[in-house]
Image 1 (tube, protein in one colour):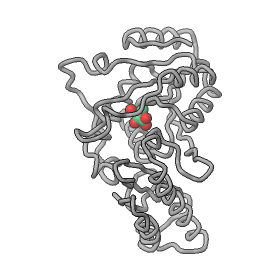
Image 2 (cartoon, rainbow, N blue to C red):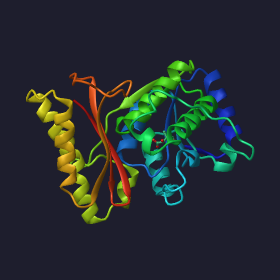
Image 3 (cartoon, rainbow, N blue to C red):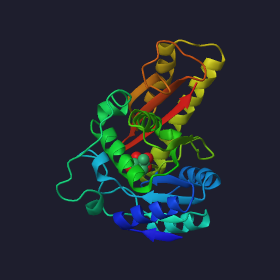
Amino acid sequence: MQIIKSVEEMQTIAMQLRFGGNLISLVPTMGCLHEGHISLIRKAREKSDKLIVSIFVNPIQFGPNEDFSKYPKDWESDVEKCHANGVDFIFNPSAESMYPSGFSSYVGESFVSSGLCGISRPKHFRGVATVCLKLFNLVRPDYSFFGRKDAQQCAVIKKMVKDLNIPTEVFIVDTVRESDGLAMSSRNRYLSKLQREDALSISKALFKAKELVQDGVYNVDRIIAEITHMLSMKRRLRVIYVQVVDRETMEIAQKIESGTSMVCLAVWVESVRLIDNIIL
Ligand code: PAF
């Protein structure tokens, strides 16, 4: 396994791999790898000859008062996990090399990204789309892999890839959960014991919503009310949004359509912002 820090070197190596007839997979990450990332890496490994994992905490997707400076890092463990799971290259550029002084070109998706997290994190998806486009241009992966926990991010990337004819096939991999249901996230590391206990209500509320639909409750307002109620019972939780949306377009659903509608939510667990979702 090789660790590449230079943008130019990554581009050259990826080009050589491609000319050598290799199928390339890319798993973009911000590091602090957990089982969710590992499941992406495993899927990507199966599909390709060469597997590149990028580890880059992307400054331009964080707002001014967000957790960029304290975003968790675990470099040694990330390298070990990549090595153990058959990664060929870790791409770990510096912020200065990705965004040299004078950088001024951004990609904005304006439909899928406009609601949900796009409201409370106004420049977030512009930052995500920009870094992903840069990574796609550098690596030119045949396949790229993203986790469904970030459902809106997945929808934005798929839309950008389609709209801009980017030659990569995007795979969305199911959310991996802790045994008690909490969706895996690098930000779970911020949670205290008590915060984590309260955060469990997030997945419980989503599972409850799915159960209600299975029992024949197709009323969007009722589903949202149930979830909001369960979350508001916990002292440390503050709901940012709970919405039922179309899983591809992220448009607000008027009625629940099995397999197509998704509940997406974002919650403050005191100072920790978590998101989760479930397909109904
Ligand atoms: O999901 C993430 O970790 C990030 O948003 C991504 C896709 C790596 C872009 O920085």
